[in-house]
Amino acid sequence: MPRDEHQSDDDQTRQDPGKIEWVIGGISGVLVAGMIAFLVYQALDATPSKPLINVTVQNIEQTPVGYRIEFRAENSGGATAADVTIEGTLERDGQTVETLDTTLDYVPANSTRSGGLNFARDPEQHQLELRSTGYNDP
Image (tube, rainbow, N blue to C red; front, side):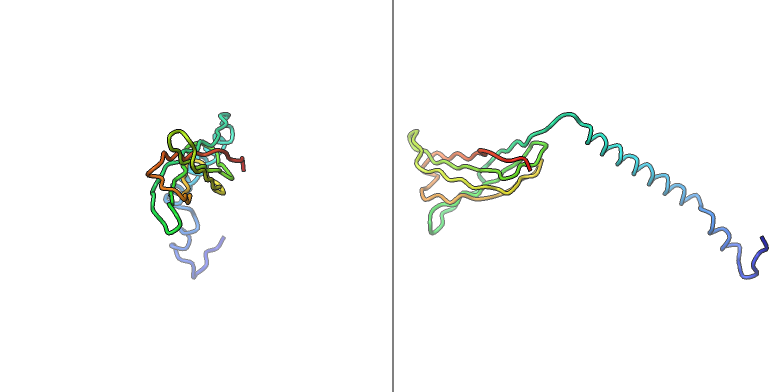
């Protein structure tokens, strides 16, 4: 092919990929192959995991209408839980004096969500128990 008078040597060398392009292309290929391998491994992992919800008290404060218990629900399991029901109970001398519950829309795997319960009685004068009583699979 005859050479164009206006085409310089620099224009000819830019048409062929250089060493840097080959290195970057190789690294990109390895990263893509690694991601695909990881996704296949996750898809074939035969260990089914379920949600595991642990509820802890974060704060107790008095309000004009009672006492607010702020809590954190932590899902340390490997699956998302939907419609997570959190129950709070106040007991005194072995007798339940007040029970409340609330529902969290969802708690993803290995994450936390926060919420609150509004009691009429002072939780500091009673034994407080918070727990997750149920969930749905999304």
